[in-house]
Length: 115
Length: 115
Image 1: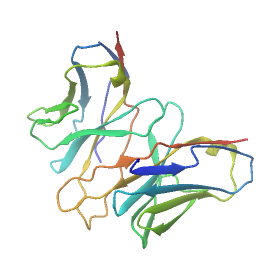
Image 2: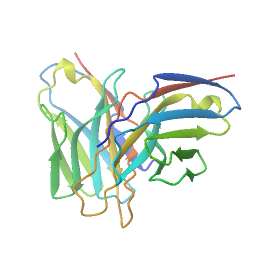
Image 3: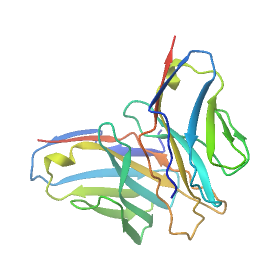
């Protein structure tokens, strides 16, 4: 699995968009980009994932560059409850029957949303 | 009710004691995982199971054992606990299904302290 590089910390004003960058310059063609977050000592929470197209769901948007070497997670209207550590993970997706399954969590980005 | 539950949520024990952490899920997923998290670090995989008959070691399995009693239950045991096993332990589940997604869903965690 490819490694990722994230800034250790960022902050954002409440109500503004939070843009969290991730570099994954060694990503392979069959590797997806996943984002999880962990709110202080709680279990990590899945946010979004994508392969090469931009993705959006009710929580966030994921923008992947055309060369797929980097991506940005966007929380469009950050709230205080979005304060958490955000993990960017790249890995091969595992279909049923595949032996792959684990996620490699790095140290992530500590996002602090302030009032 | 939570889809992935862990018991106990907190446990303090002494060196040399046998400890069992339990994980149950109602998501109907085949795959289950045990991770540990140490302060300031990401999650590291201890063991994982792709179905009831399948058990695999993760990157830090020494000192741990697991049991997959049923599709919904995956237990982690510390046969003889030692202080450096003090950590936050997370159980997770996933089911890749027929598509290239294998989102992992995490339990709330068990905080284990070994004195």
